[in-house]
Amino acid sequence: MAALLKRFGELAHRALPIGIGLVFLFIGQALLARITGPEIYGFYGYLLTWVVTASLLAKAGYEWVLIKIVPGSIRGGHIGRIRFILERSFKAVSLRALTFTIILIAVGLTTDLGQGVTVGIALSCSFLVFFLSLNEIRRALALAYGSVWFADAPENIAKSVLMVAIAWAVVSENGSISVEVLFWANLSVTVATVVIASLVFFRLKMPDFLSVRPTHECMKGHNDLMRSMWLASFFNICLRSGDVLVVGALTDPTTTGLYIVASRIASLAATPATLLDQVVAPRVAEAAEYGEKNRLRDLSWEYAVLSFVGCVVLLGFLALFGVQFIRVLFGDAYQESLTILWVLLAGHVANAMTGPTGILLSMTGSHRVSIVVSGASVICYFFLLYLWAPTYFAMGAASAFSVAIGLKVLLQLLLVIRRLRFNPTVFQWPRFGKVS
Image (cartoon, rainbow, N blue to C red; front, side, top):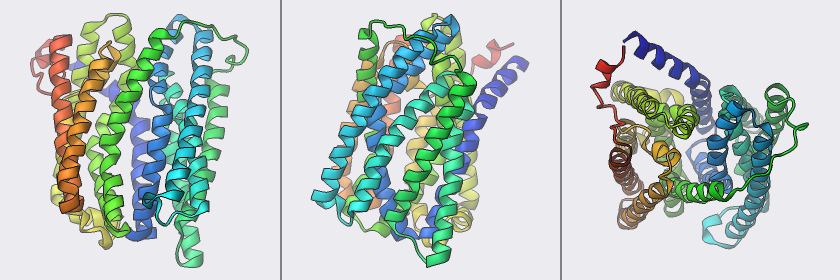
């Protein structure tokens, strides 16, 4: 039991910087919603979801290549290999970001989806896609190096504080703030944090990086992983952002603002899993590369216990103090989001109970099967959105989300049990007796 508690402590310690970053991010979004009000925050959040979706698709796949390759390369001292992969990732992600930027501008200025979008908003959103994409590559490299503070602190802590400060200053001076000003502020802060964080990281963690020549290698296997993970990321982004985009397209900005707030609070239930994903993924990749199956089993169970306990604590807190929690952080204008919140929580609870099934499949050579699961879940999701969202609006979108997430994690769990021959969930109770 002492060894078990020690391992839990080590895992929690590694996740602490990411946890602090997510706390700042959540409080920053809450204060921003309170300062701007449901209508402005709803429109800003709706457009920002498009921007974040484009940036995530631009970097999708390459972050997993870095997470899979870099830990083993560090262990073997192959810095030239890391430089080659990083340079290749930078070029590819930059080209993708430019492509998605052009698409966003075209959609925003020529279709009803971009109703209310000015030229200034379109330009700021386009630049934001590019810099957010590069920031995701920087973040993946920092995580692969085990530098968790460098991964999340610049984006989640510094940026959250600065965005709230800017919004508060503008509203105090002018009485309100426009969506265009919010996006230009977001872009300015993002550029500053990306540049400063990158310079500091390379100076402290990779001082000899530029002096080492890149070591070229065959990318066929890595390209296969990248393409597979791009599709998996696309499906996951659809599941994570599809409801907000549908609600934003079908309803008014105020309703969208209420839904986004409910989604933000519900995502707290996934916070333990989000923390552990980023800490555990490089360790799972390393264990898989060296064939350490017992270590995979231990990491999976520890992950499941921590994520499930954190989720249960949040559910209890919201059941007792949910109304007061929304009133204090977001304001009374957002109280209607509470009903939507409980529907969204069902999907997050299912995800917390099943352990790191997606990571296990992706990092142990079953990434193609993971794609099939994600694809089937997305098809189910959009079918349910088609049935429920036009009639029940926010509640219909929330219900579709929870059902689709539940289906996805169930299928992934069954595949992990079948392919890896162990149970990664929190219900792996015999593990208590096996830890001395």
